[in-house]
Length: 233
Image (cartoon, rainbow, N blue to C red; front, side):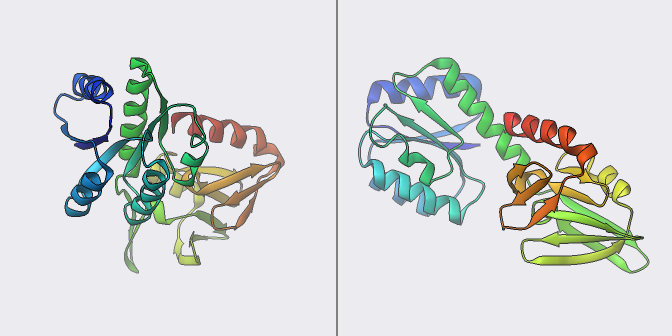
């Protein structure tokens, strides 16, 4: 795995490098002390999986660049390293996996690394495949926002609406993916946890604005499972 560190302070760069190498001995590590060098390197080599980015200098440039980078590569994980200053809330313009505070705490660095690795493992391409008389249907789980049971059919919905209707029970669909991605919030609906934007009482709002009902009998379980998912994230 390739990890990059943008850090202007040589002592902190060394500390970060040491902790990362101790916990990931096979990692390929690259250090930069100028954002221009980082941009040039990343533009040439898009293989970086985790970036530790200091906000000591050029803070807004770093934050805005991180946001653009994530739009191009949704899998890259960003860990910001910062002091408590006026830029601390600006980091959420991007989608950081973790925010480390200076001076560094070794345990926090380890936690940021573990969380980034966990997110990378979750984002690896896994697909839902059905083989039946109609042929073979395959779709990445991340492209499924939710599924709906409609009599004997299962309607699969993505970002822009209905993707496919297949002959499958919702209970059998959940067996396929072992409950890793999806949560049944209603007898007729199962939602992809990674696409939930808000969970309100008896309603789920997805990131694309779609809403799904939560049955009263499943509300507490739905809330608990979603909280567990967020904690693991």
